[in-house]
Every structure is written in structure tokens, then in C-alpha cells.
Length: 161
Image 1 (cartoon, rainbow, N blue to C red):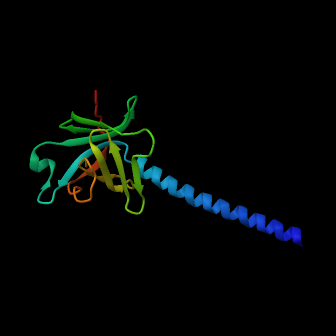
Image 2: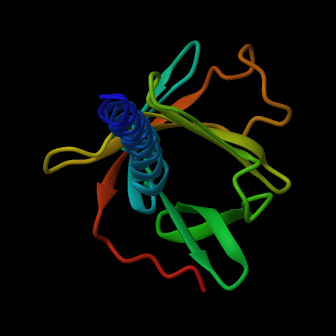
Image 3: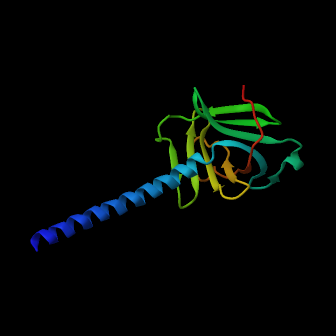
């Protein structure tokens, strides 16, 4: 009987560890999908400031952004009418400068020179993917985070170089 009780304890311990591992693994998969899902090309829909809302129709130009990586590292590139305007590389190849909040559906990444850029309202489900992107915040503060642009996913090719 003592061996049976010991066996039950071991099986229970193993089952508890597996459940804990699965829960942690599911959380990491959500984080990976949230951060990795923003990669690609995005077309500007609108920008909201504290006093105005701007659209391509109201300003007379289009904007695009591309989140990708190359030999220099992971980067974000801003385009205006398909012409490269800015390119910012992530500060680090590790995740020390990437902050993911699954509950708020946000990813904040630090870029060299630009500071922090926050991606929020990330919708990767359905036919049209969309997200809200902050202006570069250097240094980051909640008070400075007042300008947000909405982008939708696109398959349009952008050639950075």
C-alpha cells in the first residue's frame, strides 16, 4: 500500500508539472504570436492626435510601414507614397527591449535612435489584420503616448533598397 501511495504521489506531481508547463507554453505561444504577428507590410488607415484625425484622403498622401528583418537585424521602416522615409533597428537582438502584455494586447519595442514604439489593438484574426502604432517615444511615457496610427495588413510589395 505504501508503494501505491508513493506511485500516486509521483503521478500527481508529474501531472501537475505537465499542466504547469503547458500553461506556461500556451502563454509563450500567445506572446510569440502577438509579437511575431506584426511582421510584414502595413498600409496607413488613419492617425488620431489629441485634436485631429488624419486620413490619406484628408492629407493627400499614403503611408506604409514594414516590420521585418535582414542582415542588420529586426527593423521598422516608414514609407510615404512608397518612398522610404525612416528605418529604425531594434535596440537588441534579445528580448530585453521587447515588452509584451497579453492582457492589454500590446507589444512595446525599443528601437535605436527612435526610442520606444508601442503596437496595440493587434487584430490578427480574420481576412483584414490591423493594429494601432504609436509615434516613436523617446523617452517612453504614458503622457507622451497621445498620437496613434491605425494600419491594416497588405500584400503590397515595398522595396526598402
